[in-house]
Image 1 (tube, protein in one colour):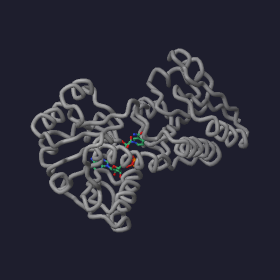
Image 2 (cartoon, helix red, strand yellow):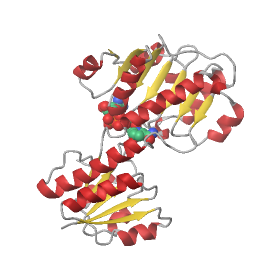
Image 3 (cartoon, rainbow, N blue to C red):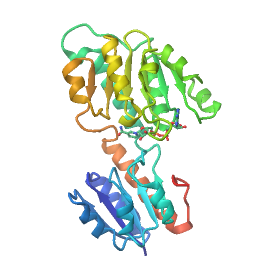
Length: 307
Ligand code: NAD
């Protein structure tokens, strides 16, 4: 019997939470939840005796790990894991996993929900434009990027995709144009949708030089991470290109400045909500529980991210 803590500042839905508990308890594990905590000391106290931790966007720092001497595995129910200090985990021999692909359809649907709203001028009664026949560039062709391609094709868009690591078959299978040069992607596509992780290579990599290559009526859509944008370059693009629009589920630090100076050319969700559907909630939470079970049953670390 292992002790598992579900620590969520922003809780899972009741259905997901019940499902997660049931899956873990079926395997004999003891499950506790810490929801809507407001003070990190509550988390420090709750992790004191746990072997496994299931979290969402909760910050799992070196300090949290220092309070959890028995911790063996942390599973981030979701795709991005930049909320977890991987180096600290590795040093302590703690396995960190994510649950890739479980919320990707939710994020991809949001891309198009926001895009249609933007090109229809926020439904203000003026004349908008359509997606049919337009070119979309997908940067990062992983789980979300591939869902975006599927939906884009449904809209009748021409789909271009770039991914530094994905093998050729992935592009062939999805029936999209494989672009290898990032400048080419930005030059070709009126719409660019970002689906890359935030890491030392990608942080601030979307800069003015790249954005300024985009064709007329360029729209940048970011449901990935705010950090991948060079905000100075973004503002320069807004200044120099009146036709440019920016839509994000991960609002920039300078969102107030952008709102004041460039009205009607942006949309930011009030809070990150790409994965916020009951389906995604369920999928990611249940996958996390199964991964914890598999880890304790057979040592399975298929989704380990701190290799
Ligand atoms: P994923 O790991 O399945 O896909 C990411 C892809 O990016 C991989 O195929 C990888 O090869 C590729 N990649 C990595 N570095 C690259 C680079 N420098 N250039 C081009 N491609 C590169 O992840 P995913 O589930 O598709 O998620 C993508 C992004 O979306 C992540 O940043 C994740 O944090 C974010 N996300 C946001 C939400 C939200 O709520 N808005 C939800 C899920 C995921």
